[in-house]
Length: 174
Image 1 (cartoon, rainbow, N blue to C red):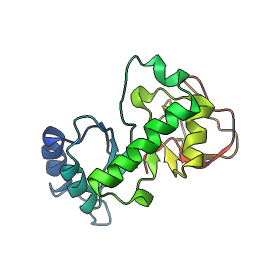
Image 2 (spheres, one colour):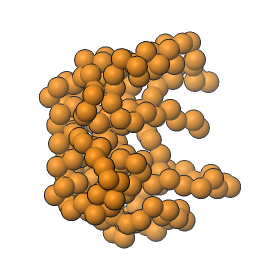
Image 3 (cartoon, rainbow, N blue to C red):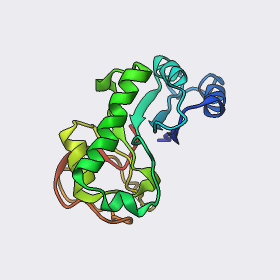
Image 4 (cartoon, rainbow, N blue to C red):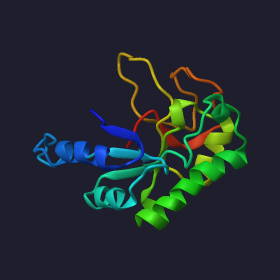
C-alpha cells in the first residue's frame, strides 16, 4: 500500500506537480486513477485549486489554520486552541473551498507535533475519522491503520502522547 499525501497550502506550484501525478497515466492495479490526500492549511492556499482537486475526487483533509511556530506551541496547546485551529480550518475549507464538511475526514498535526489528549479529544468531538500525525518506525509485519479504542504496539515517538481511548483510525492517511 502506497499513500501519496501533501501538507501545507495548495497553490500553483503544488497544483502543477499534483496534476502531473494524478493525470499522468499512473493507475492502481485495478485500473483506477491514483488518488492523493491534501492536509491543507489556510495560509497561501488557493481555494479555487483546492476545489478543483476535490472535484477530481482527491481527498481534502485538515492541517490547521495557522501552522504556527515555534513547534512546541502545538504540544502545549489547550483543547480550545486545538479546536480553533482544527475546526476553524475545516469551516474555512467548507466556506472558501466549497468542500462538503462531511468529506473532510482526516487530520495531520503541523510538524507531526501531536498535542496529546487535547488534540485527540478535539478530533473525536468533531467526528474526524482519522489522524495521520503519529510517525511509526518500519515494522515487520507492517503496522496497518488501527483505532485508538485499545492500546497499540506503536510507540509514540513525539510526545505528548494520547492516553485516552478514541474511536478513529491513526497511523495512515486514508
